[in-house]
Length: 285
Ligand SMILES: Nc1nc(=O)c2c([nH]1)NC[C@@H]1CN(c3ccc(C(=O)N[C@@H](CCC(=O)O)C(=O)O)cc3)C=[N+]21
Image 1 (cartoon, rainbow, N blue to C red):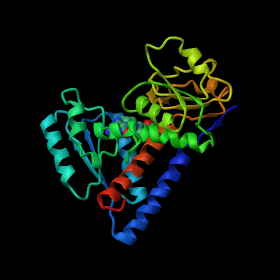
Image 2 (image 1 turned 120 degrees about the vertical axis):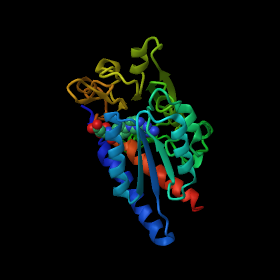
Image 3 (image 1 turned 30 degrees about the horizontal axis):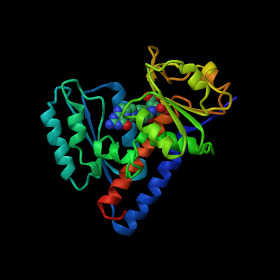
């Protein structure tokens, strides 16, 4: 039976570190840290996330600036706001909540965010830096996953790591981070053949495909570390991961729950990135 990885506890530890350093820098150098979150339209799931983030900012001692824009906001209006935030010294980090309404080109918006304030690490400059290992920001979800794996005491070096999913936001950067820790990394996706065999070879399995209960216990090697990035809202309103928890926990050595696994880590790493951004902008680091 697997040990459950407590994402809430690990995220609380990360936030406590951030809060402590934030307080220290405020007292020693008068540093203030601010995060701007922009949300366009009123998708309920996006709302939940934005509220969680706001609470996290308060908990670590950041100022948060929230910009809620109408669904029918034009791309030009959104780009204008991003440019204002790029120049606003109180704002160290900018997060534009994705997905954006269809009439707005996400790429254009991401490209407009100053790379120094891009705490999601979605800007091409920051994505490129991840490839060469010279980053200041790690993308929040993959960074949170790394921290959860670390919390189990697992050494990634030489391990078979399988990532299911190849999105720019999770799968691809996740594979890079595991590679940097000397994992042997395989990326699987919808066109992958013999997925089950590949999964059965995984010492570390990170699942980010967005399909409820897709990975079942029979696809998991005995003793594997299983990280579930999925967040699927079922018809009954319940949140459910990409891994079928009941069968998977019988095979894994460690497993993350949904909710209470990767989700809270994403927010904790966002706080960490925002503090890093503030320090860099103040010339402290
Ligand atoms: N620019 C941008 N950056 C993001 O990082 C980003 C985004 N857009 N768009 C949406 C996704 C999703 N995301 C979540 C993070 C944490 C929870 C979270 O806290 N989840 C809790 C529970 C939430 C619940 O109960 O609904 C948990 O898993 O335990 C949820 C969702 C960040 N995202």
